[in-house]
Amino acid sequence: MRPCLFISTIFVSTLFFGFRSLTYPVEITGHIKKNPKDTSAYVEHLTVFVKGGRKILAKALTDDKGNFRLSFTPMKEKSFDFFCTGIGIDTLLIESVTTFDSDEVEMTFYVPGKVKTNALGKVICPKCKRTDKVYEIQYGDNPISVRHISSSGDTTYSRIYKGKYYEDCEVRPAKYYCDRDKIKF
Ligand SMILES: [Zn+2]
Image (cartoon, rainbow, N blue to C red):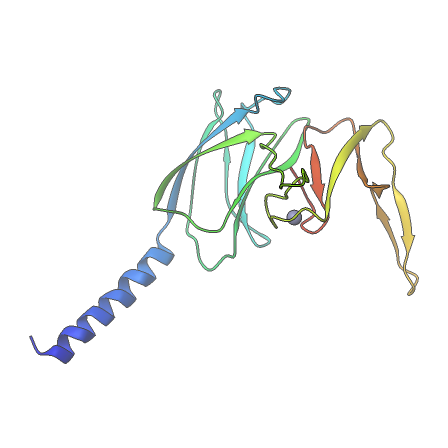
């Protein structure tokens, strides 16, 4: 084989396989487990969905043991955010990943998610990996809502007050809220 033909063969196959790995579907075998530190949530018949940006890429229901299967084709999403929700369970972010190691992955999630803290003991948001917009959720019957009026006269309501995020008792078991991503975990 002539050198230039050989090189172009490598180039073409790299292109082909590189492209292939981006567009092939990912099969996920998932397991939702109770967080040993907070076993108040149940794991059966939860809705699990994965979002890339604002788009829902796939959705599934867990079985009696908290197992589920999901399949979708990653495109150029910056991250893949796994959420779960159910009766009395708020929409929780259970994991955020930027890439998958292979086309078939097995993943274990906890509800509520295991909380990670930095060296200073501050809670890290699983999505933005930062701590500065994370608020602890305070549950109550009549959650506080603070009215903000902007200079242009627009009124918005915020549930953040004195460093806590206020939420109704009806939904649980999220422990924290990130105001940057508008997610609970
Ligand atoms: Zn965040």
